[in-house]
Length: 199
Length: 199
Image (cartoon, rainbow over all chains, first blue to last red; front, side, top):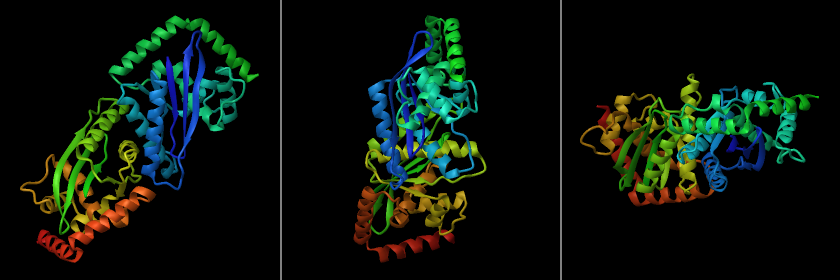
């Protein structure tokens, strides 16, 4: 299963693609952070992001898109931009029939490090380890998009959207993936990796 | 000049197209409200809206898109959906190089009725009058999208987005439109229409 993780933002939009591998491992396919100039108007920035996102969907053909779930925060201007980008990417994926799943930041942190309060450094270290990279992913803020993709690989079945058609397919595909990979053995390996990362 | 007004919303998204005519008048081209089922997941609803909006851009080829500017309100769940839809439509228009302008609800009300606090009934009556319709536009909640388009025709030059390239073209086009139409005579007619509607 190929997963595209999206860390939505107007100024920086993280995109990360992984392929799931046997034994609950995953492989990095592509990662980048799309930036749009703060001096441009919001519509032009959203247009540029639409182009970039559709290009990624064309090139990488993900089976599912995993997007950070946006919540109300104090800074309304930030949340508006994030909501606009998430709406844009969700609409572009869904119109192609690609299932979209949403995960909160704390769900992602818990899935990747075992703690919902992990800091950026811990997250980057675990993402680097899980994808067996020689060095942390670059740019530095690209790890979040990969973490969203990995998170979906791990908790997708329970956190998937309520999408009637596509999600049912997704759940079936995820169940098949788990069966093939041998969940118990994989879970053991994962727990070992987690223990190792906390040393 | 052809203007597409967008009243963004997940449950109901109003779309209204008008053509500007000499003497600051306007003609209805098309109007509808796109609805998505509340039971569907947000991504599927956004995907359906993306399809509908792109179809309108294809069919009507507007010179400019006028979207309601979303502000923070008390109901966070509502504003999130509205922000997602506005982000989606802005991105889809901008990627085609179509200028996007934003107007607040009170700007629209003031432009259409002369009062920023006009009620729905007054708005519908003025929209019906301005477009010289035999009956109020249907569906009933479609008038807002047309009002956004008319508002842009009237205050577009001052309220346009900061889009560097497209907006400059837009401003030039609007200036040309005004010059051709004879602003003073048109303004008189408009004022007369306003007076008439307040009787």
